[in-house]
Image (cartoon, rainbow, N blue to C red; front, side, top):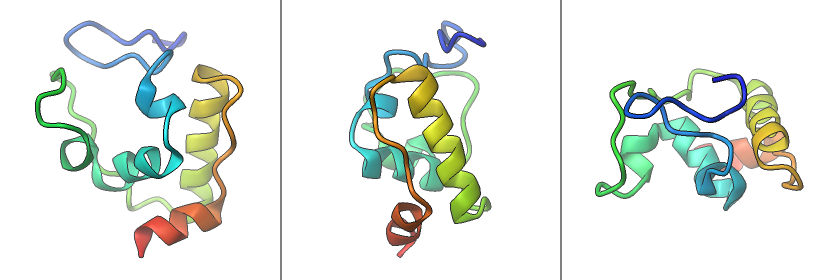
Amino acid sequence: MPNGSGVPGMQPALAGSPVVAGDTNRFIDVLLKGPAAVLAPDREKFSNVMPPFAILGNSDLASLLTYLRKNFAPGTSEVKPEQIAARRN
């Protein structure tokens, strides 16, 4: 949903998400590796499974993560391409 509220049973909410608002390294890992590889196995499951986005370059991924944090977790820091590069290694 445009307001980040998600769709019950299909997509998790981005607004108010502890993953979006929380530890930057964990958020980076979720997008690089996919949620199934990073988040707890006993978390709520959704029918629309997010794939990993490691195909994106460091700058593109940093822009995406920063956009999500600024829009759905106001007050959080931006994500830098250097942080993405460090997590890839």
